[in-house]
Length: 226
Image (cartoon, rainbow, N blue to C red):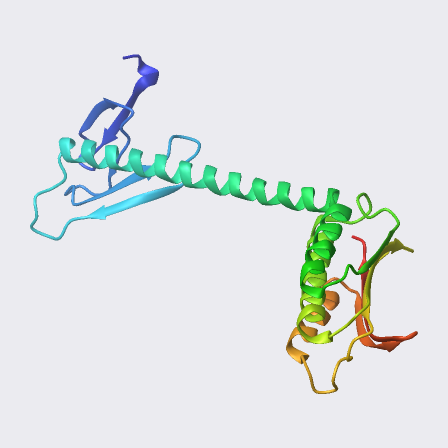
Protein backbone atom coordinates (compact mmCIF):
# COMPACT_ATOMS: atom_id res chain seq x y z
CA UNK A 1 0.00 0.00 0.00
CA UNK A 2 1.41 3.42 -0.95
CA UNK A 3 1.14 6.60 1.10
CA UNK A 4 -1.50 7.81 -1.37
CA UNK A 5 -3.65 4.77 -0.57
CA UNK A 6 -3.65 5.36 3.19
CA UNK A 7 -6.38 7.25 4.96
CA UNK A 8 -5.90 8.03 8.63
CA UNK A 9 -8.35 7.67 11.49
CA UNK A 10 -7.64 10.38 14.02
CA UNK A 11 -8.96 10.00 17.54
CA UNK A 12 -9.67 12.92 19.81
CA UNK A 13 -6.99 11.78 22.22
CA UNK A 14 -4.30 11.96 19.51
CA UNK A 15 -4.24 8.26 18.58
CA UNK A 16 -4.02 7.57 14.84
CA UNK A 17 -4.63 4.37 12.88
CA UNK A 18 -4.24 3.82 9.15
CA UNK A 19 -6.28 1.55 6.94
CA UNK A 20 -6.63 1.68 3.18
CA UNK A 21 -9.59 3.79 2.05
CA UNK A 22 -11.01 4.24 5.58
CA UNK A 23 -11.65 7.77 6.71
CA UNK A 24 -13.34 8.59 10.02
CA UNK A 25 -12.85 11.13 12.77
CA UNK A 26 -13.69 10.75 16.45
CA UNK A 27 -14.96 14.12 17.57
CA UNK A 28 -14.06 14.29 21.25
CA UNK A 29 -11.38 13.07 23.64
CA UNK A 30 -13.68 10.49 25.21
CA UNK A 31 -14.18 8.86 21.80
CA UNK A 32 -17.96 8.91 22.29
CA UNK A 33 -18.85 10.54 18.95
CA UNK A 34 -17.60 10.17 15.39
CA UNK A 35 -18.08 11.79 11.98
CA UNK A 36 -17.84 9.59 8.90
CA UNK A 37 -17.97 11.16 5.42
CA UNK A 38 -20.17 9.58 2.75
CA UNK A 39 -18.08 9.83 -0.39
CA UNK A 40 -14.46 10.22 -1.28
CA UNK A 41 -12.26 13.24 -0.86
CA UNK A 42 -13.46 16.03 -3.11
CA UNK A 43 -16.95 14.54 -3.56
CA UNK A 44 -18.37 14.14 -0.05
CA UNK A 45 -22.18 13.97 -0.27
CA UNK A 46 -22.97 13.87 3.42
CA UNK A 47 -21.43 13.22 6.82
CA UNK A 48 -22.66 10.45 9.09
CA UNK A 49 -22.67 11.67 12.68
CA UNK A 50 -22.66 8.95 15.36
CA UNK A 51 -22.66 9.36 19.11
CA UNK A 52 -22.67 7.09 22.17
CA UNK A 53 -24.51 7.67 25.41
CA UNK A 54 -22.39 8.58 28.45
CA UNK A 55 -20.90 5.54 30.14
CA UNK A 56 -20.86 3.38 27.02
CA UNK A 57 -17.63 1.94 25.66
CA UNK A 58 -15.82 4.36 23.34
CA UNK A 59 -15.44 3.86 19.61
CA UNK A 60 -12.65 1.43 18.80
CA UNK A 61 -10.56 1.34 15.63
CA UNK A 62 -12.24 -1.90 14.52
CA UNK A 63 -15.72 -0.42 15.01
CA UNK A 64 -14.73 2.67 13.07
CA UNK A 65 -13.46 0.52 10.21
CA UNK A 66 -16.82 -1.28 10.14
CA UNK A 67 -18.72 2.03 10.18
CA UNK A 68 -16.48 3.38 7.42
CA UNK A 69 -17.16 0.28 5.33
CA UNK A 70 -20.88 0.88 5.83
CA UNK A 71 -20.40 4.52 4.80
CA UNK A 72 -18.62 3.37 1.63
CA UNK A 73 -21.58 1.15 0.72
CA UNK A 74 -24.04 3.96 1.45
CA UNK A 75 -21.98 6.31 -0.73
CA UNK A 76 -22.06 3.82 -3.61
CA UNK A 77 -25.84 3.52 -3.22
CA UNK A 78 -26.15 7.31 -3.39
CA UNK A 79 -24.00 7.42 -6.52
CA UNK A 80 -26.12 4.75 -8.20
CA UNK A 81 -29.34 6.55 -7.26
CA UNK A 82 -28.03 9.83 -8.68
CA UNK A 83 -26.90 8.10 -11.87
CA UNK A 84 -30.34 6.49 -12.23
CA UNK A 85 -32.06 9.87 -11.77
CA UNK A 86 -29.77 11.44 -14.37
CA UNK A 87 -30.55 8.64 -16.82
CA UNK A 88 -34.31 9.01 -16.25
CA UNK A 89 -34.07 12.77 -16.68
CA UNK A 90 -32.12 12.34 -19.92
CA UNK A 91 -34.65 9.78 -21.15
CA UNK A 92 -37.50 12.20 -20.48
CA UNK A 93 -35.73 14.97 -22.39
CA UNK A 94 -35.08 12.60 -25.30
CA UNK A 95 -38.76 11.56 -25.33
CA UNK A 96 -39.85 15.20 -25.42
CA UNK A 97 -37.40 15.98 -28.20
CA UNK A 98 -38.66 13.00 -30.18
CA UNK A 99 -42.28 14.16 -29.73
CA UNK A 100 -41.44 17.65 -31.03
CA UNK A 101 -39.40 16.27 -33.93
CA UNK A 102 -42.22 13.94 -35.02
CA UNK A 103 -45.14 16.21 -34.13
CA UNK A 104 -46.90 15.78 -37.49
CA UNK A 105 -46.75 11.99 -37.20
CA UNK A 106 -48.18 12.09 -33.66
CA UNK A 107 -51.04 14.34 -34.76
CA UNK A 108 -51.91 11.99 -37.63
CA UNK A 109 -51.78 9.02 -35.26
CA UNK A 110 -54.23 10.62 -32.82
CA UNK A 111 -56.67 11.70 -35.54
CA UNK A 112 -56.62 8.29 -37.19
CA UNK A 113 -57.12 6.68 -33.78
CA UNK A 114 -60.41 8.59 -33.38
CA UNK A 115 -61.71 7.28 -36.70
CA UNK A 116 -62.79 3.89 -35.38
CA UNK A 117 -64.83 5.48 -32.57
CA UNK A 118 -66.44 8.16 -34.72
CA UNK A 119 -67.31 5.97 -37.70
CA UNK A 120 -65.71 8.46 -40.08
CA UNK A 121 -62.29 9.99 -40.68
CA UNK A 122 -62.00 13.61 -39.53
CA UNK A 123 -60.47 16.03 -42.00
CA UNK A 124 -56.90 16.97 -41.20
CA UNK A 125 -54.87 19.98 -42.31
CA UNK A 126 -51.36 20.79 -41.11
CA UNK A 127 -49.41 23.88 -42.15
CA UNK A 128 -46.09 25.47 -41.24
CA UNK A 129 -42.94 24.17 -39.56
CA UNK A 130 -44.59 21.86 -37.05
CA UNK A 131 -41.62 19.51 -36.79
CA UNK A 132 -38.98 22.24 -36.55
CA UNK A 133 -40.35 25.42 -34.98
CA UNK A 134 -42.28 23.96 -32.04
CA UNK A 135 -40.45 23.50 -28.74
CA UNK A 136 -40.57 20.24 -26.81
CA UNK A 137 -42.81 21.44 -23.96
CA UNK A 138 -45.27 23.11 -26.36
CA UNK A 139 -45.49 20.00 -28.55
CA UNK A 140 -46.25 17.87 -25.52
CA UNK A 141 -49.02 20.23 -24.43
CA UNK A 142 -50.53 20.39 -27.92
CA UNK A 143 -50.84 16.61 -28.11
CA UNK A 144 -52.50 16.52 -24.68
CA UNK A 145 -55.00 19.16 -25.83
CA UNK A 146 -55.70 17.31 -29.09
CA UNK A 147 -56.19 14.07 -27.19
CA UNK A 148 -58.73 15.73 -24.87
CA UNK A 149 -60.52 17.47 -27.77
CA UNK A 150 -60.86 14.23 -29.75
CA UNK A 151 -62.09 12.42 -26.64
CA UNK A 152 -64.83 15.05 -26.19
CA UNK A 153 -65.68 14.75 -29.90
CA UNK A 154 -66.08 10.98 -29.62
CA UNK A 155 -68.05 10.96 -26.36
CA UNK A 156 -70.29 14.00 -26.62
CA UNK A 157 -70.54 15.64 -30.06
CA UNK A 158 -72.70 13.13 -32.01
CA UNK A 159 -71.05 14.57 -35.12
CA UNK A 160 -71.09 13.32 -38.70
CA UNK A 161 -68.26 15.59 -39.83
CA UNK A 162 -65.21 17.01 -38.12
CA UNK A 163 -61.93 18.66 -38.95
CA UNK A 164 -58.58 19.13 -37.21
CA UNK A 165 -56.22 21.97 -38.14
CA UNK A 166 -52.69 22.38 -36.76
CA UNK A 167 -50.57 25.23 -38.03
CA UNK A 168 -47.57 27.37 -37.21
CA UNK A 169 -47.78 30.96 -38.37
CA UNK A 170 -46.70 34.33 -37.01
CA UNK A 171 -44.76 32.76 -34.17
CA UNK A 172 -47.81 30.91 -32.85
CA UNK A 173 -48.93 27.31 -32.85
CA UNK A 174 -52.68 26.99 -33.33
CA UNK A 175 -54.86 23.92 -32.99
CA UNK A 176 -58.47 23.92 -34.19
CA UNK A 177 -60.88 21.04 -33.71
CA UNK A 178 -64.35 21.66 -35.15
CA UNK A 179 -67.43 19.53 -35.80
CA UNK A 180 -71.11 19.62 -36.88
CA UNK A 181 -72.41 17.91 -33.75
CA UNK A 182 -74.72 19.07 -30.98
CA UNK A 183 -72.45 21.87 -29.77
CA UNK A 184 -71.32 22.61 -26.24
CA UNK A 185 -74.18 23.22 -23.77
CA UNK A 186 -73.73 26.44 -21.74
CA UNK A 187 -73.40 24.51 -18.49
CA UNK A 188 -71.66 21.42 -19.85
CA UNK A 189 -68.18 19.87 -19.66
CA UNK A 190 -66.58 22.82 -17.89
CA UNK A 191 -63.91 20.85 -16.05
CA UNK A 192 -62.33 19.45 -19.21
CA UNK A 193 -62.55 22.79 -20.99
CA UNK A 194 -61.03 24.54 -17.99
CA UNK A 195 -58.07 22.19 -18.23
CA UNK A 196 -57.51 23.14 -21.88
CA UNK A 197 -57.76 26.83 -21.02
CA UNK A 198 -55.23 26.43 -18.20
CA UNK A 199 -52.78 24.71 -20.54
CA UNK A 200 -53.02 27.66 -22.93
CA UNK A 201 -52.67 30.25 -20.17
CA UNK A 202 -49.63 28.47 -18.74
CA UNK A 203 -47.85 28.92 -22.09
CA UNK A 204 -48.99 32.51 -22.59
CA UNK A 205 -51.65 31.61 -25.15
CA UNK A 206 -55.43 31.62 -25.55
CA UNK A 207 -58.35 29.21 -25.72
CA UNK A 208 -61.85 29.68 -27.14
CA UNK A 209 -64.76 27.40 -27.94
CA UNK A 210 -68.12 28.01 -29.59
CA UNK A 211 -70.01 27.90 -32.88
CA UNK A 212 -68.29 29.48 -35.89
CA UNK A 213 -68.41 29.50 -39.69
CA UNK A 214 -71.01 26.74 -40.06
CA UNK A 215 -69.48 24.50 -37.40
CA UNK A 216 -71.58 23.86 -34.30
CA UNK A 217 -68.42 23.58 -32.21
CA UNK A 218 -65.04 25.12 -32.90
CA UNK A 219 -62.27 24.66 -30.34
CA UNK A 220 -59.31 26.98 -30.91
CA UNK A 221 -56.12 26.65 -28.84
CA UNK A 222 -53.19 28.93 -29.66
CA UNK A 223 -49.82 29.47 -27.95
CA UNK A 224 -46.36 30.86 -28.79
CA UNK A 225 -44.21 28.22 -30.43
CA UNK A 226 -41.43 28.47 -27.78
